[in-house]
Image 1 (cartoon, rainbow over the protein chains, first blue to last red):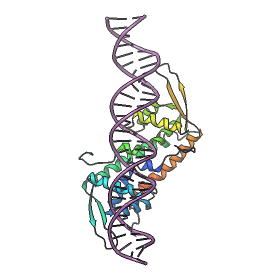
Image 2 (image 1 turned 180 degrees about the vertical axis):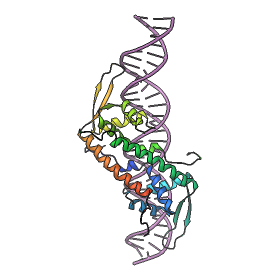
Image 3 (image 1 turned 90 degrees about the vertical axis):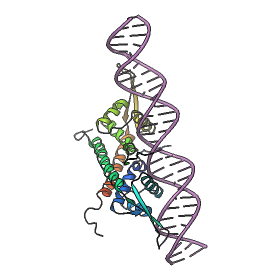
Image 4 (image 1 turned 135 degrees about the vertical axis):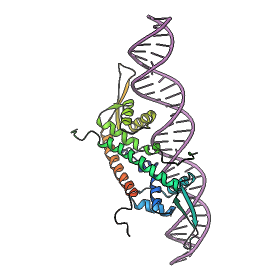
Length: 120
Length: 120
DNA sequence: AACAGTACTACGGATTACAGACTAGCGCAA
DNA sequence: TTGCGCTAGTCTGTAATCCGTAGTACTGTT
């Protein structure tokens, strides 16, 4: 049930589809493992991201063939499963970035659209 | 299963949570009915939006108390169900716009991330 | 042993897409 | 005039997708 309050949009819904892009972007800098991806995501301002969401995304991306992965047995804890972009992943990142660009442009057009001079 | 091809993000997923915002923005200009909202959304660049999605969103928003609605019997077809923002809707629009703003900012930060002064 | 870092799984919630049904005027042919 | 299809407009059910919460398990360090 919706809160009896105002009902602004939920950040979790905004993440839909964007988490892929975010994860790809993070991995574009350098290979990394789930826990670290999560941390970097949160550092960048994406607060409410759950760890399972990241692991899920990583796996989905991997199964889609956009990532390579290799396990690094660590000497300071359990093994770390590193992920990195491959060609397809790099391609997907580029594509998705474009899609995201035009999408936000359309939204901005709607939000600030033709009402620049409008005293309500 | 995903296409054996590259698997860029899907526009439909991007819409999640944003459709609310888009619909609110459209209604902020002036009251309107589903079919027209759909048309205006598409005109603004949001292509793949389905009509049922718009109707659904309209109803959700209405049941959340963000919209008022009234039926106008038309002389050129079936009746038109108009929707318009009320106070709560206006409030939600403002809130959501802010959320959207910081969200895109975070994303952009990630995408262009390693810009000036990443030497740390 | 307790704790923190790390990985994974299962279930549930929210939202959009697709397809189909239904309503109401209008124009045209028989 | 009646019948039929076309268009504008609305609504509903089901499928598919994705994120969040919670719970589990493993491994070094203190």
